[in-house]
Length: 275
Length: 320
Ligand SMILES: Cc1cc2nc3c(=O)[nH]c(=O)nc-3n(C[C@H](O)[C@H](O)[C@H](O)COP(=O)(O)OP(=O)(O)OC[C@H]3O[C@@H](n4cnc5c(N)ncnc54)[C@H](O)[C@@H]3O)c2cc1C
Ligand SMILES: Nc1ncnc2c1ncn2[C@@H]1O[C@H](COP(=O)(O)O)[C@@H](O)[C@H]1O
Image (cartoon, rainbow over all chains, first blue to last red):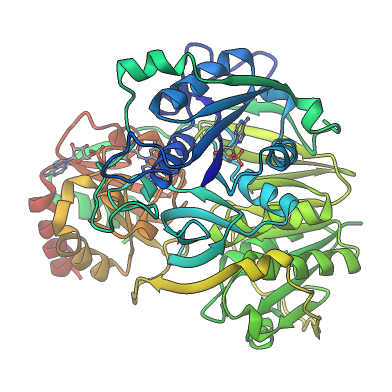
């Protein structure tokens, strides 16, 4: 199976409470480290699991291509994905300001038409914009089926995938025939989240994503990474959504500590009046 | 004048309350609005919506819509939006709306503003506010295309109350499914059976974290039952399998804003807080006095949850 994973770098999500708003009303993340978008890291891990036999992961049984839309510095994120096992990388040169989800999706569509993957495996959302739209948009532009918010994926002989979608009321299981677009949710990297056609049903992965060995990090420097121009993929670079000023949300302040369960119940009844 | 099309969300054939938040959005935008109901029993559900001041309730009833598949729903939404000349399409910011809206937007060549928590109308200009960076920033955005698609946060648009009148119900035709629909097959829906209120609609939510371990139900259920609460969980509790995934509250789970939110054995990571900080009153029970959750809790009880929660249940019973 050939899989294309769109991968974005984001300002350290665990320190997102340290972001500032500049005098011009722009979101300022200086001082925060760049990290791969967690959902995209999971998408890379999922792609690797789908292209291997879990019991001998060093033998690659498919191709995983990672692509980012971003500046030169975002190549660090691509190299990190190559080090964990992705085969090659593409950087489409642009900046976050020049993008909206629709433009990313239209450019991805053009890239898919060149690369002809069997599967586009995206994150459910990038945790800066929290937009949750690129996978759905690219599916529509390609005329492909979509299975969003995947908490589990089982390959049926690499011609179809059974996807457990995490939805508000529970898990919605769908079967999509490839080629298709899937976006991944958090639970996908659990021990039994992904089953490739090669992996024995009983195989359990360690929870989470794999780490790159030092050797692999060195080797990743030699893996192919090509640069493309955004306008070559999407001639119309007009944005459908533009952002103006931003602001910090109102702060919620700390309340009081109560000494006992009785005091808590009293306060909830008489002070907060919620019981 | 603006004309808004609201896409109702159904659950087991009934209208989800989040739809009423979308009605509030439409009323704030002004102009007229109609509501589209899609499903195998859409006409019965449409009857629930006739008292909210809509110009029309449009019902698309077809057996092929019994189970939600985006590739079957999106074409009809887009076709109705086009033929009715609607300039705004609004869905609920639920897993349903978030799956559906982008595909509709792409069909309409429309810009999409996801998960908005406010709309400001200034003549022809409309500015949408939306949480970003796990709610640590609010972005203001504008859509540059003639047609707008938005999904609205239930927690920040209060549910519309019936305003009287009787909107006419009109049947609308099912549009041809996307070609891709032949390559998606609904297999099954595994729903947690529960008599409890939906997380998004509950007056009280009690959430448990990693600390509760395998005793999740034993600790949480008696408290939830007593308070008539919905049960939520942290990501860590869901990942570990202590609680099912659909209970996750947070940036990437459900967003809730009940009258009372009780966080039990939850540290208060920013991703969790993003999903519950709009709650009216927040209570935290955590044995670590430095836990970040205390920075936003109105009432904190530093205690071992395995002792404190059963005690709380007893105290509530005593005072009931
Ligand atoms: C992309 C991404 C998305 C995420 N989305 C979400 C999300 O939507 N929702 C979410 O919740 N998280 C989310 N997270 C995870 C989040 O970062 C935290 O890891 C998670 O919320 C931690 O869960 P927890 O508080 O249960 O566990 P922990 O952080 O381990 O906290 C457990 C707490 O229990 C306390 N404790 C231990 N024993 C006891 C006891 N006996 N009595 C009382 N207290 C006790 C401890 O003091 C501690 O504070 C996301 C993370 C990522 C990377
Ligand atoms: N600039 C980008 N570069 C690469 N992938 C992206 C980019 N923006 C979004 N994506 C992909 O689309 C997914 C959903 O993003 P979004 O719809 O913007 O929340 C992400 O998890 C990525 O997989």
